[in-house]
Length: 355
Image (cartoon, rainbow, N blue to C red; front, side, top):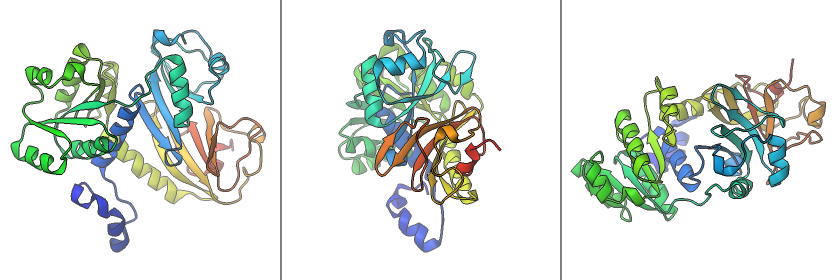
């Protein structure tokens, strides 16, 4: 369901045609980018419990003064209700415990409410305010959806697009955006349109190489939040090593939606997979379960449960409240719980237990 004309009719189409799942890859990619521009210090943001819980990935920089400190020390010092759930170092990837130390250059993922994440980032000196403006290269469908979302967030949008007819369409549909008919790979044009002072720069052309090259160029002349779209997956490890900000892979986003749906239809006992994301370059999964019926885990404290290794019970959402669960907390019917694990294929909440 890629055509913007039908994007508002998805509910009607599902009901009338009996379709159980509709995926719009371009809209999903645009939504992911808009989250990053709302919180530009994050490399990646995944949401759970309908936005009440976020999984945020960021890079540890020297100015944060976190180098050599353990997770327990950091948690106690900053007194923020967050959970460190993944660390990606130069030659290792782990789901950490309290004794694990952070090093400059590590890429760290935390689980928290948006408010608690913002409070933590503010304390370590990371920018938390959304960008005020953006320059988008490429005027395709993702750009259309993204521009609409950003304009609704009061972010100034400038789109550079080669095709004159497409520019006319965008001008009609995005009245509050600035549409430039020109070659977005032209260095002088980018400088003329204010790339040096832009707060964010998003490359959405149909060529991966152009998107990466433009991000690398922008990195040398500006402090903008950089987001590049990449379609081909074969070189994702090399692209990630370039450190060009956030890289969006529409195919990964679509695959996660499909897997989430498949897992939800396969649940066997008393819970349902509500949300699923691949993290740590596919080495781990972050899943949100809704506990629907009574089962062996309901009513027992986490310390009583024989949990699988390399598994964290990350966040608990109950009656509108979010908390980082501790050993004395229990899981109850109606709860939404976020699990982070390297154990693949979890389909039911009972799968968190060692058999």
